[in-house]
Image 1 (cartoon, helix red, strand yellow):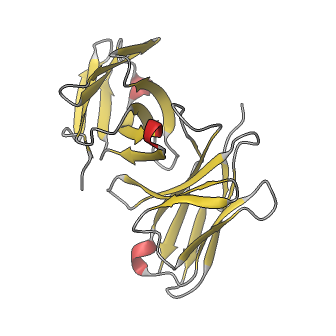
Image 2 (tube, chains in turn orange, green; image 1 turned 180 degrees about the horizontal axis):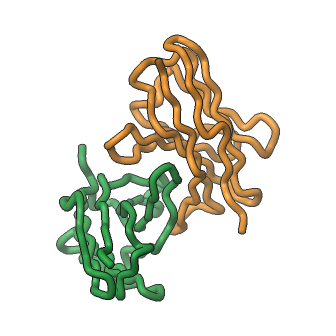
Image 3 (cartoon, helix red, strand yellow; image 1 turned 120 degrees about the vertical axis):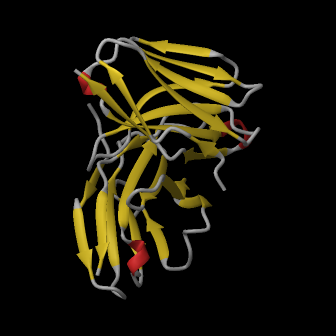
Length: 114
Length: 114
């Protein structure tokens, strides 16, 4: 069964460093998303991406964050200068179309900023 | 800004009985609702969805009920099985208004007692 894959599963980084979280969405999907879940809190939307551009972003997704689909298969989230409060599980998701359809989530990357 | 609320952080149910998980929302533009199941250290897994034109959707042991006037939905699992023990998230979106992002509730931890 097709699935969304994310790498790495766990990333530890020092405060102020740049990190890139990687995702391979399901191959025929058109919509891509990043969500995050801070420990003990709910899953929060960060950004959606369609047709090679951001279609929507949340207040959390400030200038420190960027997304890219560099090669037609990978979908990356970059955090330029990590802060302690960026520590969270980051989930990539994809969906095949717009409208009433579910998003499929990857297993997540646990980012720990120290 | 809690547009989607799950007021029960936890629920314990005897194996074989019915589990009922509840969710309330405040945004009238939401017209598509989903339930996701999540195990620790994994991404959310889609369970079942319902669009606002329906009041019930059934898939095997899982049934979702939607009461639009009350802005309330519920997930029924019957009969409950030990493998159902997980955190369940309600989510909502407004795809007919061009908003594909999912807004999640805080989750309910379901424990099935053998």
